[in-house]
Length: 340
Image (tube, rainbow, N blue to C red; front, top):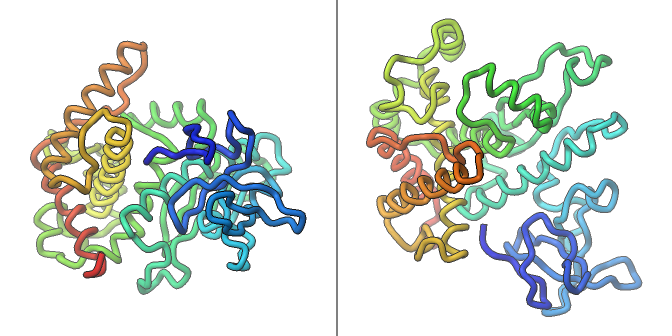
């Protein structure tokens, strides 16, 4: 995440809706990847005090206070780019759901920021994804007895990323993390993993190399998952896989690796703009990025341990995983238009 500022010079953050120093309203402009300081006009629009551009707040900010996105007034859009991806939102009449949705949207907006930074399309023209990337935020009977579904898991299908809103409850998420013997479980991690499934169809064209690294994707997905949940991960999986779940099927290995690629890119950009490392990810080779990441991840973990917290990045990036991360990096860069 790059550093963001109010027009008064005060540093602000990606989630802010107003400046804590000058109290002026803020809005994030996804089209221009910048935070904008705006002033209210009598006609209901908002104006950028620097370039005079006219904006309006995202409808989800106006109605529910869950977003800080803005759109150009002449776009004739009620929602910002990130909120236009929502297909189903939580029932906010139920206690706790508004706060859950706020947490979910904060994570989703960081996903969108990262995807746009990599110039990945949100409306990918892929067979089976006629509406591009979309999100359903759903409940099951565990949080709402009136719902017919006993269990809804997080997943991706035909361009739709589904998230059970219980993932926004810290206690529930930690319990599920322990039950699943996971090292890491966050809303943002879920989104980045499921986005990996979405972009698999768009990005992966070199199937020979993919199969060499990840395995044969044509093997039965359902059978592979059943085998994983029955018998657990492969012995010695840590040498070639970023997580135990990545061993279940090549598609899951790709999605887990894709998610970690996004983790690395966002964290390195943040570290660079804050002076922790000297160069932005795009200014050095990918091997050099991974060397920076190795040092940064170790530092993050040690800082957390100094504070009595769990490791921020509880993973080991082995040479086998490096090769997979290289493949993800290459497929993303190969997709970009020639003039980019």
